[in-house]
Image 1: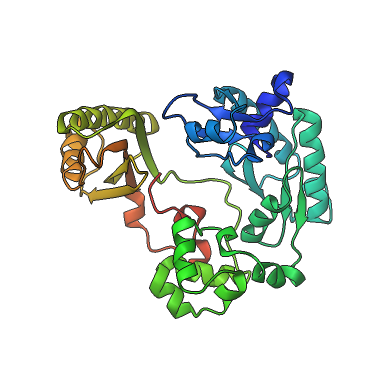
Image 2: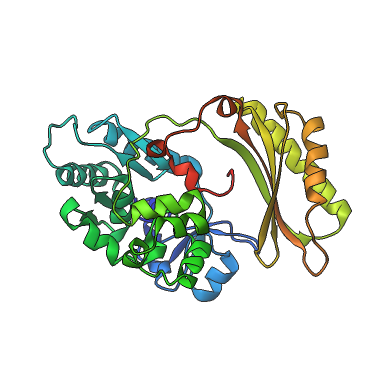
Amino acid sequence: MDQFFAAVEQRDRPELRGKPVAVGHDAARGVVSTASYEARRFGVHSAQSMVVAKRLCPQLVVVEPRFQAYKEVSMQIRAIFQEYTDLIEPLSLDEAFLDVTENKQGLLLGVDCARAIKERIRAVTGLTASAGVSYCKFLAKIASDYRKPDGLCVIHPDRAQQFIDQLHVDRIWGVGQKTAERMHRMGIFTGADLRRTSLEQLVREFGKMGRVFYDFARGIDERPVITEWERKSVSCEQTFAEDIFRPAQITIELYHTVEELERRLAKSGFEGRTLTLKVKFADFSQVTRSVTQECILRKKDELLPLAKKLMAQVDYSQQHPIRLLGLGISGHRAETEQVPVPHQRWTELELEFLPW
């Protein structure tokens, strides 16, 4: 979907149409969840500090998020997808992979399915969607972002390699800012540069992701559309109104975070053995610390001592205060009992370097 949260707000509030809108909490520590295209022209983007966003765009209209409304629209969109296929892999409220090889409407071409779905979404919700069509998930994902808003991009197998070769590496799925910087230091700036880099060098530099990048550079992505996901982790985090650095403050906030994590574990029924602490500092640098136990971690009395031990491994001070604390449980019991998954079955979650 295009600018999903902002688009819903502009649809439901006509006075916002044509104006720069940011969905998020309007506070000193608020963060932009979604920015309208009018706001993006000023450099406003998601995950940006609201203070910075308002500085870039003084006329920015900040709207508190209405997640229930977004979920309702998301369900409408999901119902439209199901008119065409049952092979649906949701990525978020506003994005999903669809396998339409054998679709319910009997359409011969994927591009015809994509065009029909876009038209149905507009008719039912009044919103626009962008679609990418290709023979694999990697290329379909890139194509979906290529001609926003209201775009439709098709990457044919015969032209895939040419398309990949001209891509900047930061457009490749799984390449974040830090990975892109490492690639640039290696002289890798485009898909063509990446394709010229040996598998051995990529694996040496990026571990298992090196093999993924090697395949992506050649248009290889054998992941199927997965309709059901097994939960991999449960986590929670808190951004503080003011940075904290005193040990007593940190202990109190750690206690509250453990309580919330315990509540989420009980609600989800998730079972895991690895506790991960996430700490983000005032300068937005970030560290994580993890510990794995033989027993399932569920209760506050088990979690709090471990969280304190992990916190003791983190260097902070008045000159290097803490902005955010987070805790997560990962390492499902069943995972330790299974054999390693073959390469062709790796999942999107392996692109994440943290358990949340």
